[in-house]
Image (tube, rainbow, N blue to C red; front, side, top):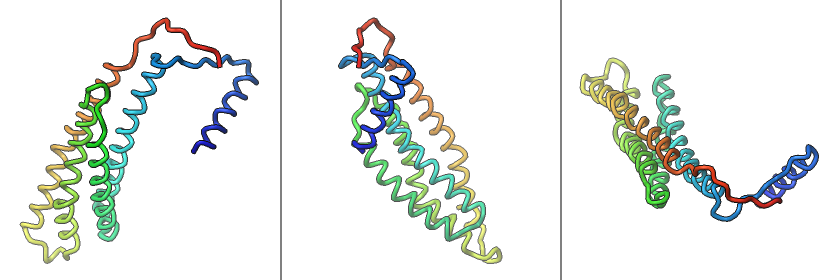
Amino acid sequence: MDQASNRYNEAFKAFAKKYNIQLMEAEENSAISELNQLNNYQQTIFLKYYRIVTLNNQFMEALNGQNVAAAKTLQTQLLQATEQTLKSLRAMPPFKEDSSYRDAAIKFIELINSLSKEGYTKMIQMLEKPDTQRTQEDVNQYNNVITQLQEKLPQLDQSVQTASSELLKKFVPKPDARPAKRL
């Protein structure tokens, strides 16, 4: 990783020199440094959240295509991913005492985790049965999971998006006249 970073930095400097671009480096605790910290925090949470969203979408596509084998595999992956992600996010400190974005992502992932444990299993079990052996209870359980997804998931997703926007509004540093030094 360090080698790749060093190669990137050298290529970046060579490009700047070739095109006569003056590079500036931020001082410690500058607005740029603060912005980098904020971006790293926001992106870390987003990537964890996005991984779960993607796996969940793949699971739903497998169900819609009635691909039971793929759905089972994706359910296992989703359960493992949500467990790992929840553990990781819960261990993450808040950003400058603001945990709203992290907490919104946790709530979203908790729902997917809960569905992965129980609801998705019931959906798969129903699909495994031939149409003639499906009971009304099977259909009701399947529909209950769909209802939860349709009612709760969009609200939780909106909460994550809103919390992300609010985090950025609150902590993106305002421009100031702090000096920068030449690289």
